[in-house]
Length: 186
Figure (spheres, rainbow, N blue to C red):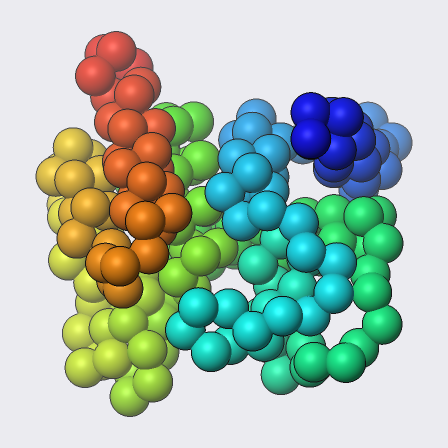
């Protein structure tokens, strides 16, 4: 088990290095978040149906192009999907968050958005938009500069509650979010 985790960590580190080679520096939060998400989601190289009925593969990737019966993906392909999706998450944060964030906030909100999504009016609640079309309370508080209160909102996004792993993940995300704030970094 530990050798699998080490291999996954090495592959993710390599993929980020290749993406940010040539003098570009990867954001500090990116590797830590990819490693945390890979541990929280676990690696499944073949498509499976998740506990809420959604076809899923690799480190929790979902989407219209993921269907049962597809060939297994390599660890490298899964790592590429994870990094690609995390860079999309970064865009969501940069487009919607109007205040500076600590590394802990970047890590927590990236994991949170990776798992939940930005949301879409009429479709799904998320970090940015609620199904009702309103902005999420978390994002509203964050953009008001209420960092601690925004971090505390993470705990309310524990649905379905019967998924113990999700409960643990939300607690960990909230702790990471608050970590640098409590240390006086903000």
